[in-house]
Image (cartoon, rainbow, N blue to C red; front, side, top):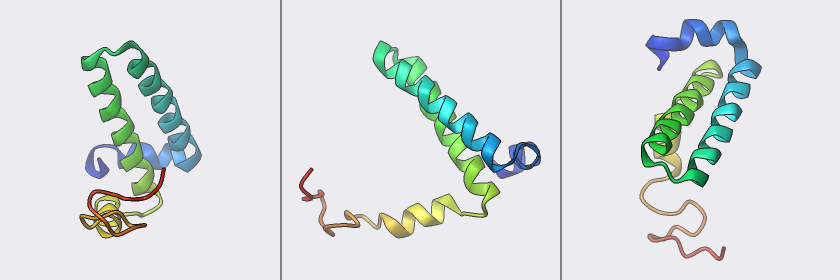
Length: 86
């Protein structure tokens, strides 16, 4: 995502990129309601792309951060599967 979109993301800024991410989350919500599998897949991909774009803008390595937090067990109860009370 960095090599493809960072130059545009930088111009849009954090606020604009966050706004686009929120828009995509709304589109994902709608696709989940319809149950259209192809559309859901596309919207999940869009949400992920905008999340990576926002992380790039604030210099967060999302892959590293998620790997460190979720090391094969729940970060709260340290169990797999998670045993936390909902």
